[in-house]
Image 1: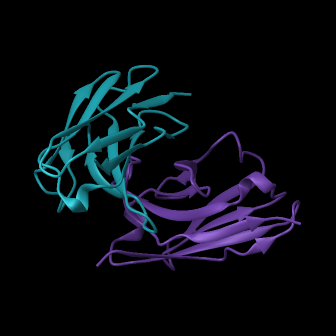
Image 2: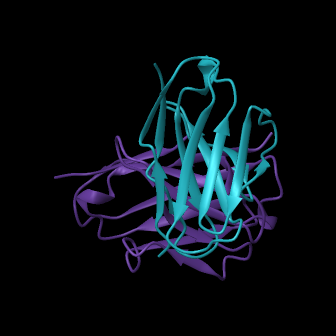
Amino acid sequence: ETVMTQSPATLSLSPGERGTISCRASQSIGSKLAWYQQKPGQAPRLLVYGASVRATGVPAVFSGSGSGTDFTLTINSLQSEHFAVYYCQQYNDWPLTFGGGTKVEMK
Amino acid sequence: EVQLLDSGGRLVQPGGSLRLSCSASGFQFMNYGMGWVRQAPGKGPEWVSSLSVSGRDTYYADSVKGRFSISRDNSNNTLFLEMKNLRVDDTALYYCAKASSSIHFHFDKWGQGTPVTVSS
């Protein structure tokens, strides 16, 4: 099983700041990495797939990078609607696995 | 508009059974992989099961293998999850999710979730 490890668990930032979330895979997954955003009471929303491809309708404030085992989601110029929990997910092999999540909260 | 309507969740006793359904609309259901993802209260998402466009290829998390069965009815655009021998730790909100393609199982659309509570 490919274990996905996210850091940090919590990111405290002010509006307008840049946020960076890391996701590390226990083995190489190529670019088979997706990022999701989840707000309270809502289902996760796909932000990025293929490590760096923004999903339909996702604003350019979100950008993904990385390959192999190390990946990053960057949120440029945080706005109020970006405060949420973010998860990575690998889809390179079975079982599919998610990271533990990073909560982006307002400082 | 793509829509996934999950249903079937309820309170059930340990050892009991349940069948979840997901009615899909707004896309060519038969052309996409599908899956179920659950989320226990206060926890992150946990993948449960997925299946191929035909339904012949099925995949399960170790925690549910042998107890859960995923299937699909392409004629009626419906996804199912049969759950048997339910345990307390199966308690979660269960989401139906659409894969982005027939072969890439990241999920670009999710249902609203149906709650399953396993308790005596």
